[in-house]
Length: 439
Ligand code: GLY
Ligand code: MN
Ligand code: MN
Image (tube, rainbow, N blue to C red; front, side):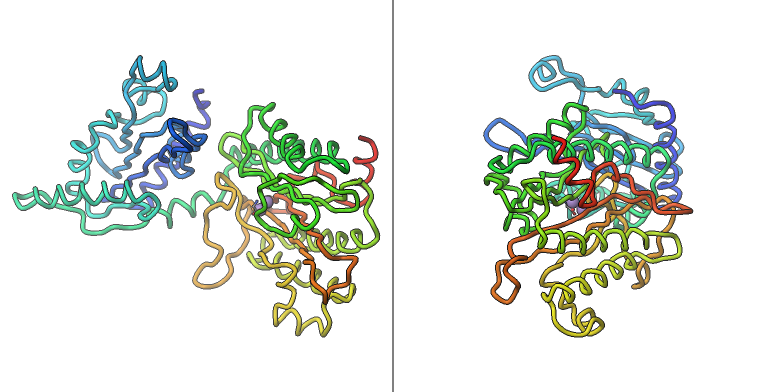
């Protein structure tokens, strides 16, 4: 599918901005994600590298984008696979080298099989190479090989880049600020994620299996043409206390809570929602007491996701509500300030309150600038996801044990109030009970 003219203009702007940021005499090399084998002759679902996609919009593997700022002949060069009737019959369509300039706005395109001959020449005369070293060892080694090739040649005159700089600093800072078009894609990913959660909530009843709720999530996403942005987490009872539980293979029991953490991916952009609800559709007193604390923490944290605050303000608000609540329920004992200072809550709330959200679920962008928490600015998108995970421990009141609760929303920082783009999924006790009673 070809991107619209608006999207293409936006990608061109990104490449220009990046080239301006890295300065002339520089070259940036951005490889596509490699294909990963799943078992003999079958691969994992291919997912394009987010940096590569952000700059090119190209979804094929075995491609490399090269940006050469200020180069007269061509600044944006793409290496990609050539058309091949036999290979395309077996493995799918290819754009091909001839069509790449027209479809992807590359100034020039070459066959990926020729990269070893061409790339050293592009490096020649450049002072700095911008590249994200350390992600893919095989590609790292190829870059080193091209440089070495150039070095051996330079003994007869050519100049070799003398600096290697991480591309992440400039590129990831750009990616942190979402454009209007990106926000629209994130809103759609959030809408589809919400629809998946609602379907799973409706499907849930005692005796059904965790994977059956997973199936509701995935089928909702796929029916809309989306993917899942990460493996869904569906954990009943004690499984809800395992933060990255993805086995999803146990029965859901009457009287337990279930925690679902899942999101859709729409045109590369991720949704990431968590909801926790009683398997039988009615909160017990103990479940309600715990749930209300997490919900209050979620709302308190969201209200802090505003311009003028810094990255850690929502987390600090959530920690305060959670610690206060744990004292109220007799799970923590002591003085609020001291318990917060000594991080006693971490036994029950061991992760942070959120992360940036975008093309990656845990999106790029620094959380600190000059060792200080980053100021929140319009166009930044983050998750707010406080949780409480009460283990099966003898020093905790019995009625609360084996309960995992997380309430996670996706939030856009704006000039005004935070925009919660995942509010379509019920999250108050009454809303959840009403939805489950109606199904
Ligand atoms: N699903 C991963 C997270 O919530 O961060
Ligand atoms: Mn999540
Ligand atoms: Mn998350």
